Length: 298
Image (tube, rainbow, N blue to C red; front, side, top):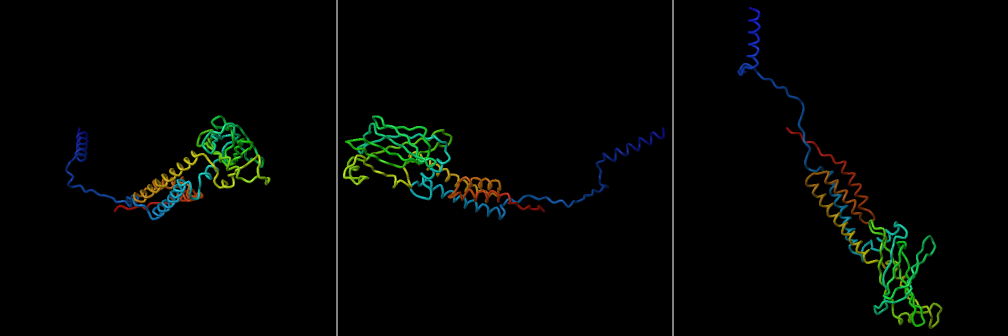
């Protein structure tokens, strides 16, 4: 009984010690470690700012390129050059060519011959048809690119040949067929009569007005293709302005991800001679070298 009383007393003392609210006689001890709390600096580091300025310059190259595209009659790139470069990679027999043949007074020329010829692998290919009562014609399954169009009109014992250089449009975006619509105004008989005969005679059966020499640099093309060209320029301008805005925003906010996005957008502005594409790749790679320093909280 005595042993049990002693055990109960010891247990009671232990419980009292653990649950006692009176800690006045106890002292607390703290141990400090060498760990320090650090956070990432919010401001853009110098290399990030330099990259941001670089991206702005790249976007300016794209902006200039876009302005060039929206000025079809001037600049380094012309609509016909743009369409011709696209035609080089277009599928064969993917162009339709249609239009009207009018006389000098604007009346449709019935039963005029439209003769289309083009050079392929050093061999001249050709296709021809006659216009209807309204002067309308339509070719199908032609190859996109440069062709020669001879319009032959028989009148008053003469065969008048009106020659032009024409650029057939390739399919646009996901369309299977490219469409080219051009109307031709054949000069008057007086204009043909004033031309010199090829054999030197005063009068000849076949009279010709050839516009191809003056159209070597800028051939006839579908007006819609020029509109598409201008639309591409507007897209370049929009991307360039967006890229510049993101770059400036990134430099102010210190966001590397935003700066990287700006570099990607600048790539798609292309620039003259693909300058923005090249420098855009460099800027995109530089964004991965940007490291923000750590700030130690005291």
